Image 1 (tube, rainbow, N blue to C red):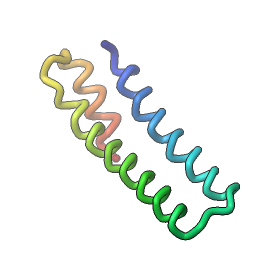
Image 2: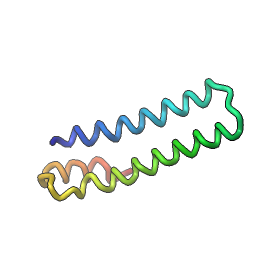
Image 3: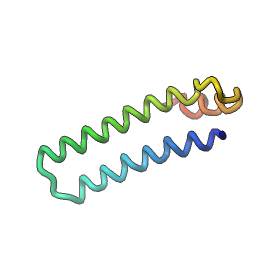
Image 4: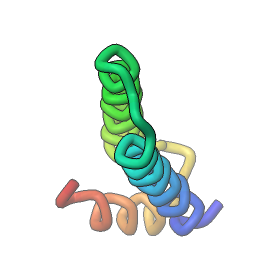
Length: 76
């Protein structure tokens, strides 16, 4: 497994959140629907945060990949 595989997962999560935000702007939603979509985005963002903390600490990865991931996610 390469660091790029982990970077791709996080990038895809970001794209999903962006796509959902774009849909929110395009579709006429009720307050309840808007709130539920907002909750979904918040949950996805929380999952992203958990993954960015987890990935650099996966013990089965070699140290070079862990260091790359730690450097990439240090600012997140």
